Length: 369
Image (cartoon, rainbow, N blue to C red; front, top):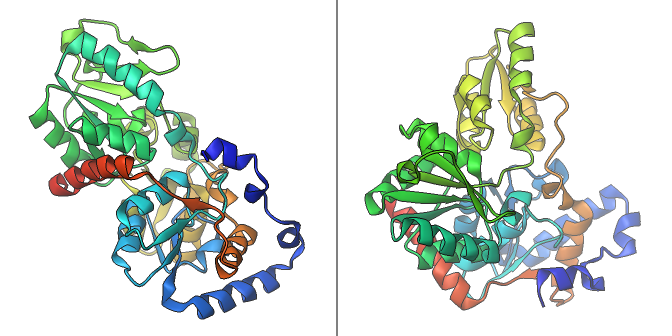
């Protein structure tokens, strides 16, 4: 049963009892189940999760890091991944057959990952091969579906993370003249620009119209950017920076490279989630910071560093809506389903797709600094 069909079934609907249970009772029940299951249970939690969920996480980190930690935990039979769908897929790809990966709410998807499905990608690849021949290598951000990771794997390409994008792009250019970067145009553009590729040598592939958006000689194109984006990071704007510079010129601005090029260019610094967290940790007491990334994480950083003046770059920012679908009631439901021997909300990637996706991940790990 596919994800769309599953979401239409009763199995995907939170039972009423969890909607009416008091928070303290839910927390106690989660504590009890964790104690009962012991080392057979592992709960990885992404940085963007709510505090009500992250308090129970056995490991906190970015998506690939959590998938790797899950795979390394051979004692864990049940991996309840508190993140979004593509993250749980990656965990299933890397873990053993004896381990089962669960997603507490199957509605927890990723708008960026959904902007590149395999059918669009195969059509684009055929068209681009027609335009450029065998001169393109595909790269995909880990924020993509298992099918897209598998596509890059079988076509000689690689995954990238926001931490290692530079080294992977550098490697890609030793393989082919051009690269296709999926699905986040902003990370691709920011990375390539920082490595010396001019903006006028970057084109955009529009999957909605199946067209290449570019004015100029096609022979000059080095990077083809998939027209996708993170709905959270696109909400940080030049206006946010200009207003902050006007009212608080003392503030250091640090953003995620999923932000638009002009936002990254005007910021003091940019980097992955891990990079941002470490930059704040190393910052001097009393320093002021505006952070351009997801709001749950920004609030957590603020709470962890009372000695610093920290704020969101966009004061009207909301948390990631799909990430926020994982909440305490869904976490408890998932754990009780495991206790009852149920099979709800299990994430499974077929072996052929998983094998090809592992190729993409392995190439990345072999080349990353």
